[in-house]
Every structure is written in C-alpha cells, then in structure tokens.
Length: 161
Image (cartoon, rainbow, N blue to C red; front, top):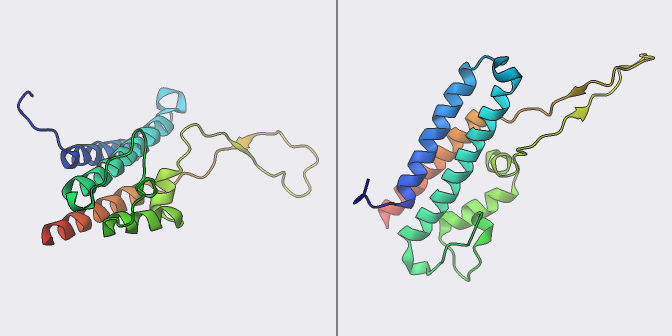
C-alpha cells in the first residue's frame, strides 16, 4: 500500500464500513454462539468503530477547514475538546449535540464493560433468586444511520465552501 495517501476521510469511511459489517453480523448472529458472548463482543466492536469514525470525521472537518487553525487534540477526543474563539459550525453543532440526549450521547457514553443491574423482586414474592438482568441495549443501528447522515450532510456543506 505504499504510495497511497492516508486521509482522515478515508479512515472515517473505513470505520463506517466496518461498523456496517458488525451491524450485519449482530443482526444475524446466533445469540448462543461463543457461549452467549457473541452479541456483546459484536456490539462492543460496532460501537468502537462508530467512535473511531466519529473522531476521524472531526479530524476531517478540521483538516478541510485550515482557516480556523485548529490542531487535533492528543488521544481520545470529541467536539467539546476543541477550544477556540471561533470554531467551524459543524464542530459547534456536534459539541452541542454531545450534551443532548440522543444517538451521539449513546455512542459516546457506551459502557464497554457493562455490569448487570439487579431486577426488583416481584410484588408478593417471599423469596427472590437474585438473578440479574443486563442493561437495555442501545439502538446501534440508529447510531450508525445518524452518524452516516451527519457525515454526509457535513461533507456536502464543506463542498459549498
């Protein structure tokens, strides 16, 4: 692969592609495979690809708009990581959305190592077996759809500049 220029946009596209593959696998996986761990492992991998795609999208927005003079933060970052007097409007939009409930918050606050929560004892039950119920699974298909839509909208806006 020598000679191919690496780009944040290309990386973003690849992470979105991997997320789509994990979603397809998640939707078709036998829930008993790998001792019942396949769904959790696939969900974790899907969210990781979504998070990587999001960070690459942010990096692409910065890379495509050099007039703002922003440098990429080190390590893991999000839109709220950028501090400047003037930010690209797309970054401002995403920083606001990171604080609101919705797909972006679900994706960013995903708990990779989930602990189960105790289910309440049923009314009138004298003895409870203490079994635990896993937390409700987030709608990862919606997260993927919304991220792809946001990326496409931002790229279309960048083409207008």
